[in-house]
Length: 192
Image 1 (cartoon, rainbow, N blue to C red):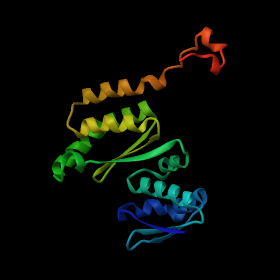
Image 2 (image 1 turned 90 degrees about the vertical axis):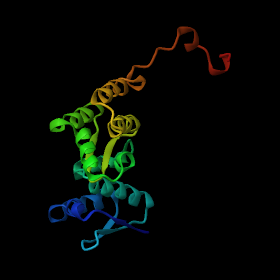
Image 3 (image 1 turned 180 degrees about the vertical axis):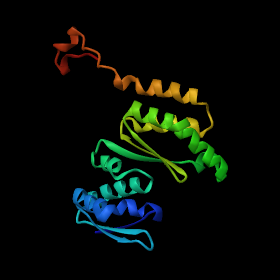
């Protein structure tokens, strides 16, 4: 089966890599064949297995959204996801405003982006009119929520507070011990 994917021409050299190295890695790791037309930036993905095509599409889309191939290959792990937030959905088509908002997501000297990546062990790319996230699937909603706070024009202090709340949330706590009285009972013995 075949599928066609069109990407930004500026990112096509990154998908190909030095001497075709990234292309070869994608083909080997995903079990696909890539036919790349550099004049149209179209990539034809071929495989007998649709899951292989799906996985390679995620990786190529991540690279097309500004991620390095090393970060994009994290998507080979089923625990990781790619999420794309469109800046225009929040600020419209005003290029000056889009650039301001991109700067807010990145932060002075990249500090906010680095802080967020360190707190959630994720990768963030601000490219074109999008903010893209590669993260563990469990964390992706929280990271998107934090980014949307800035896209809506709220202060960085609000975003930092939300990072603290989301990065130390319930899922990070150790599980509560089971009380001794219920531990020894079978499932049929518990009254509801």
